[in-house]
Amino acid sequence: MAADRTPTPTPRAACRSWRSRSPRSTRTIPHGWPAATATTPWSATPQYREPLRGRAGVVDDASAVFAAFPDLRVEVTYQAVDGPTLAAEMTITGTHTGPLALPDGEYPATGKPLRFEMAVFSRLGDDGVIVDERRYYDVAGQLEQLGLSG
Image 1 (tube, rainbow, N blue to C red):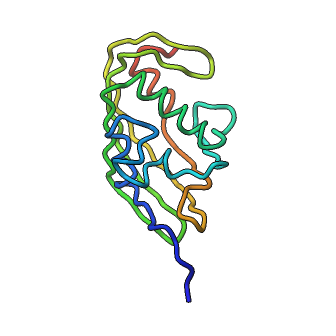
Image 2: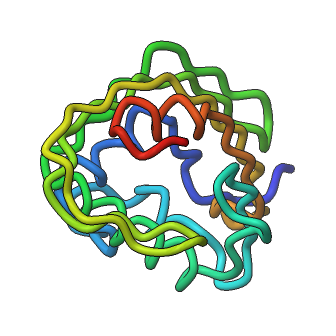
Image 3: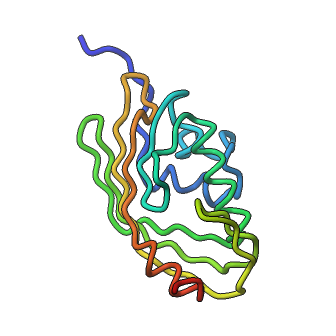
């Protein structure tokens, strides 16, 4: 007999927590990315030299994104679930109207729109929460759109 597991989140369901504008949101959807991460997960993200560590690292990252792009929209264009692995392709859009915190410093709002594609691969633990995640997107392209490259 299979062990009882927390229902597996889908990438589309997880993105609903982003739409709520609260990285800590668990009321809107029980499986938002930050809310569904283990207390000691890691997330490999292109703009950081080191992976995000722990739920607090994921929540802090989400908070920084919301501060820089309060109108952020996430559209899942493809998703797949295979056992403990979630995969998703997404289109991210928003307007840079708040300070953008990056590893090399903070950038003031440019007022420019941003649109980029992103792929995310997450692995769930037995309790249904994300234990590790890899995110793929074009950081240089984002900086160019915002007028922050070069």
